[in-house]
Length: 135
Image (cartoon, rainbow, N blue to C red; front, side, top):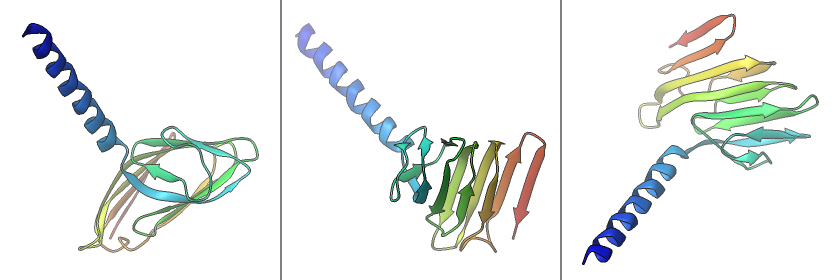
């Protein structure tokens, strides 16, 4: 009886860990272009079509570039030798509102808002300050 109870507890913990892992890796967009290489902390090496996730850090090498497109059609172009964390991404497609927080710690980037540009909040943090866009 004790062995059976222990096995059930272990199985429950494994199922819970799997559920937590899946919840943390919800896709928020895709890499549309990668030249010659970029890497995500969740997705690994990025290729066109690779998913990107909330809380993922994207890194490019000295010649690397990537173009990310989010589910609201916002785009983020990341230049060479860059480190960008997709800190927070919340989007309600029915209301076309949400919140995007990007932590750009190193390198160059270009961000263009998508369908939530009128009802969303965008915050881009850099080592030198924070840029906020509302409405």
